[in-house]
Amino acid sequence: MKIFDIAQLAEADRVTIKNQAISSAELMERAATLVFNDIHSKLNGAQIPIKIFCGIGNNGGDGLVIGRLLLEHGYQVTVYVVNYSKKRSQDFLLNYDRIKEVSNDWPGAVKSENDFPELSEKDFIIDAIFGIGLNRRLEDWVGKLVQHINRSNAFIVAIDMPSGMFADKIPNEKNPAIKANVTITFQSPKLIFFLPQAAAYIGDMEVIDIGLDREYLAKTVVNKQLINKPEAQLLYRPRTNFAHKGDFGHALIIGGSYGKIGSISLTGKATLRTGAGLVTIYAPKCGYQILQTGLPEAMVLTDKNENELNSIEFDLEPEVICFGMGAGTSQETTAAFKDLLIKTKKPMVIDADGINILSKEKDLLKELPENSVLTPHPGELERLIGKWKDDFDKLEKAKKFSKKHKVIVVIKGAHTITVFKEDLYINNTGNPGMATAGSGDVLSGVITSLISQDYEPLIAAVLGVYLHGKTGDILAEEMSYEGLIAGDIANNIGRSFLDLFKKEIQSEGN
Image 1 (cartoon, rainbow, N blue to C red):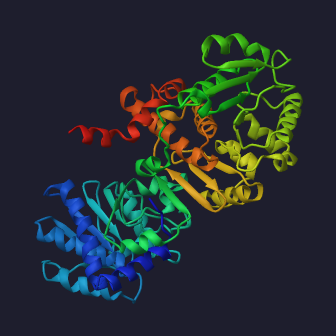
Image 2 (cartoon, one colour; image 1 turned 180 degrees about the vertical axis):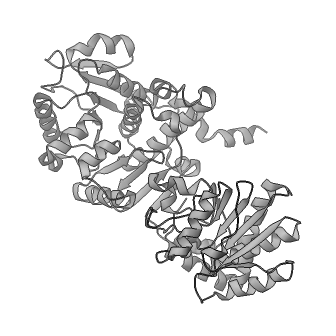
């Protein structure tokens, strides 16, 4: 799913109005009616107090249409117009007149703190004050209205975007925003909806297709994509009947140290379960028996050192090398990693202590093979690219890093974001149960396996993140968030492959 910029969505509106020969008011009626249908299907006629706060622009016009339709269907509705300016959009004025025709009371005006209505946790509030139209800081009394609504503890539905939120800035105490329980947005989600610092304001997100011009949407180039099942299906490559293990590559996984052999064991298992033809694990001598016993499908090579890596030597030519899990950052291990980087020309997957070494020894960054995949968690990312002011600054720094070093950066989180130069791929699978030790090691194995199978590194990262998260989702439904551990994910990656085409297989059998 494409994620459009605000300017692109405004242009989509313009093109739609022209090509479909409709007015902007008719497009507003269409969009707001779809929101009404969604709300009506959930409330199902329940007689609860509904309070709608409408701005005086087009988001307010949406709110007025929704209010009129709710009134026409017998709901208990009160509409408040937030008069933050003397300017009004034409579509707002049109729908202001229309709602007065069905309302016993004209919409109430809110012009200052003295006009704030009483609110309670029993209310159902619809926020249609600004939407995506906000372009300046809220006036003091409007900011206080936002805080008044938030303090009500009512159930809040935001239309298109919580009021007070900018499309490219994180809200804060000086710039408050509505904290919605649900955000119903038009046509395309917005990037900010997927950023950690904005999560408290968005609530659950619903995207409503309002029928904007299909040709424009298809042809418009974006640098942000939301990855769901349809996108993952397009990335997957089916196997042929006559394939053999040599067709799916040889992956070499290097890492581990005394007490941390489990990390590379998880990576190795995930690499195998994701379909690599051959897997070799290179570890200190202390890991030999553990790995040979716990992962018999893998081959094991050992370092000369007993407890840590200090001289990485092997006589094979793998399709991909994964480095870092449990390796530590000692001087000897750092020197061995440097030597490995200099000798390796194919893209690598680098995680955990591999990233920590790069952060400490920045000169090594110039040795990174082009199109390597780095998979840092937030702390590792900060050490790698430096501190950031907010989530938008973080993405800009990650994009700059990706372009400079010609690598792919996988920013792990609730919505893991894969960064490649200016492009962002935002994952929509995964859950809190995956916040557990070793989950990142498993992800590295999944991505490594796909590269081994000759997926392009960027595709391997995007698809790998999806499959990893989807496996976690499948398992969480059976085991709970709390009961899920990394080994479960590694063992069950195959279930996310089956899920990719599950619906299509079922429909063909009917």
